[in-house]
Length: 166
Image (tube, rainbow, N blue to C red; front, side, top):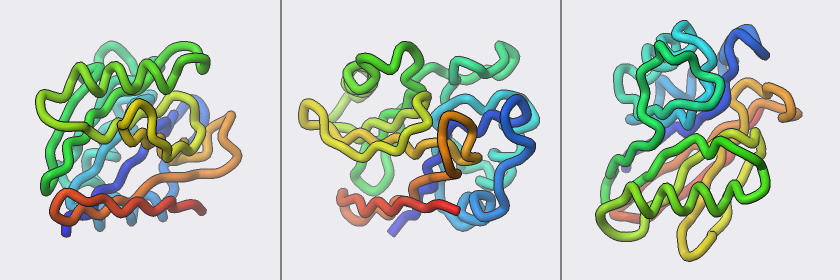
């Protein structure tokens, strides 16, 4: 039963000083971590990658430096579930549509679970038949009002999604 920590929008150091300890603990306990962009710095990326013990799938956000060489979208399969990860940059209007279109374009098999960030708003919904997850901001960076993330367990192609917050 793989455990996946899903975070986004850490914005370290522009909006927050560090990733909260409890988020770090969840990343260390996970079998795999997903970061949906806006690390904000190489330092933040290095910290998340270290906490994830090298088991990190990450994409570029709109505030990430160009020196942080990450794809704009990435897919991974865990125990029968395909995750299609993107940041979802752009206007809040149309965010879900853009995320679903990217997820469908990136996935070569089945119906992926779309994972995105950008809005700092927690989302767990279904759009055009795809589950869409946005973990909010792992540091509570504005406009979020608190730090949030998802912890997902995957069993034979079935997800259990839990929201974690400080």
